[in-house]
Image (cartoon, rainbow, N blue to C red; front, side, top):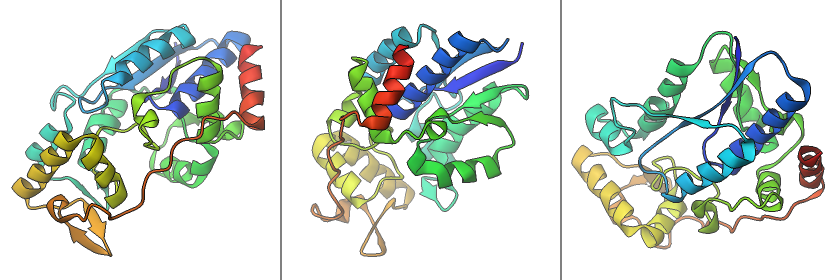
Length: 250
């Protein structure tokens, strides 16, 4: 049987995208098996496990947890063993712990569901250009933003992940190498041990991950006031959010 594979990331957008497809599948039935898959990374916030369980109950379908066993789902294993942090082609941890796991799990007959929001249309277009797969993006189909997704979760009574509560705009790993100066200064305050670990990794590998005033700079030398503060996320449910939530209720 061909499958609908919903890629759940423990983020608000992927959770709402998955719920929309699950409810659509219940209404219409498509003769396909529906699978919800999550690629686990060791450095994600511990609260993600709670969020995953809450969403699993909301979906009514168990979530398949996947992991790159070669690197034990650990970003630091990837950095040290590959000698690469981040560059023009992206981050080594994303490629090996997320993308390669998805590639190993997918089948040619799958319809794959992703949580791209309307703000990410250009990013989704680039993703399509790079991947010859059958995709669904229900958030773009229904005009939902990331804020709308946070609102849907709030109305559904799903407690948002801890990283959102701390003011981070994405629920990535704690200490994402793709983050900028402001992000890393926030990590310095909220997770000082993570900041110190990444500073040591930089020193060990002779690499840097952030820029300040157009120049590469080590975390050790990053001024504490560099970059922009992360804005607090908005959980209000607007018109589009409310319409999407009502559709899920019905």
